Length: 107
Image (tube, rainbow, N blue to C red; front, side, top):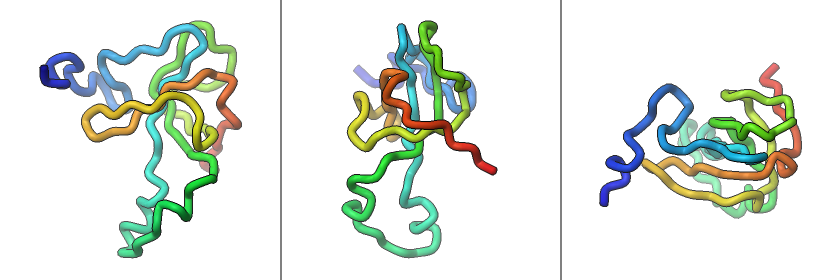
């Protein structure tokens, strides 16, 4: 079975078709902490970011969530929070709302 048959790609920007948050769960996409370094041509070992919290983009919010976040917001979560799955080379994280440490304001 091909993953693309089950999950027919992205239905809109930032959202993945076939994955919907339930109860108090939040679906997130891990942002790449190495992106700005890779673009500059620098190689940083993964251990440099090993124990630090991770910034993620919110893709979906369950109906029972009480946290004031919306799709597209960036949040900070613990390094080992939630359950991580990989679809189409994207790392998707499913967590409880209580595992969100804070909302990140881009200003």
